[in-house]
Image (cartoon, rainbow, N blue to C red; front, side, top):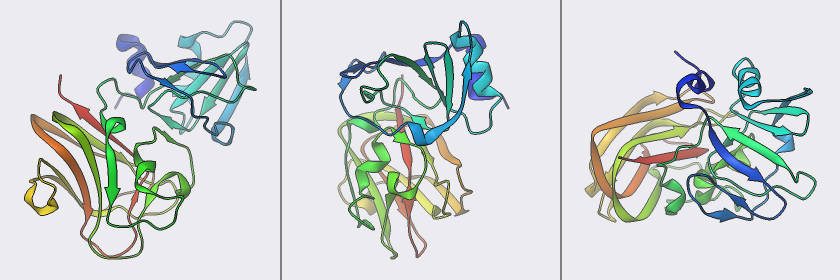
Amino acid sequence: MLSPWTCLLTLFLFQIGTISSTVVMDSFFKKPFQISWPISPCLLQSTYLANPTVFYCSMLCSGKSQCEFFCIDDHQCELYKALISIARSLPASNSSKNCYTSWGHPRDVAHLAVVDAADYYSPVTRPPNAIAGFFCRGYAQCYVSKHNTNRWWRADLKDIYPISRIQVRTSREYNFFKDVEFRVGNSTTLSSNPVVFENPGQAPLDHVVGVNLDPPVSGRYVTLQSKSTGYFFVCDIQIIRAQ
């Protein structure tokens, strides 16, 4: 299977944007973000190069385990294990980076959603964490439920979209993504929307659980429901609309 970076040979990269201390313009969403995010804990490697290029840095990332995001900063290729799908501004100390991701998708509509859930474990693990567009490490960057039954997480997209793919990244620390149903529909009643996919058993750590919907399924609400008893983690979700 080709790595995400190998696709550069035909598709090039999804550029997150030129990162400044004020506003980042995402090359796909055309929407400015002014939210800082803690990128330094995600650093895997920083390599000095006299003239770093996107292609060369992408090859370095492709050969580095867990690298899914890199930045070019002056003479440095910085490789990160972060999952970045939404452009954000960096603190002033990181004022001139060009960054690229293998996780972002131009038709991802998850970031448009209003989200809720059956419950949440603590104030720092609320439902919006799953659509924040940033995940590096630590359960505090995920949505985490209480230890309970009938745990669910729901995205209200505020409009009806034809959905062609849903994919979720599981936690890097704890295996709590088990027996999960994916539902898409237009009803606020969870059970009224059809199941489009079920992940039986326990998903592995740091794993993408996804389903391609062909033909696409139209709906306003996308719900994940764990049918087992325990905690429920959703660290990052992408909801891809059809072309």
